[in-house]
Length: 109
Image 1 (cartoon, helix red, strand yellow):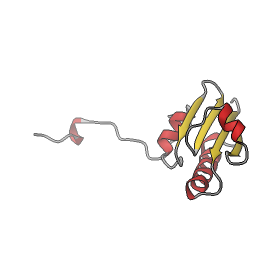
Image 2: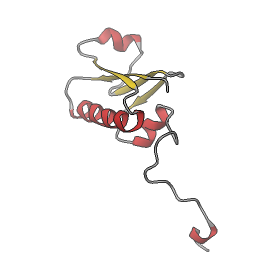
Image 3: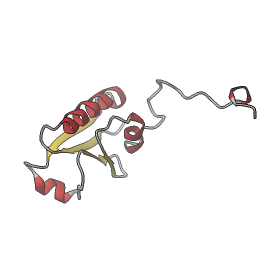
């Protein structure tokens, strides 16, 4: 498995920043099983890095490797959105599988 290179852009220690950091660390530990390199970048301290990556909102997660480059904006509380952004949909996640649609589960009109 190729190691994921991730950058999380935040602004200071705001509630959204703190939530994004906690959510991403939990997702990485559960889904990437230690196969990741995460850098948390405070745009107040390193604005040139945010400019370089064309960050227009925070928090923003940038997945550089493995390709393709992906960006996910928000506090990363929507695990499905984050997994999609990391290209991990269906790869390792097995909690709460969605039931298959069947005629027995559909309403009759």
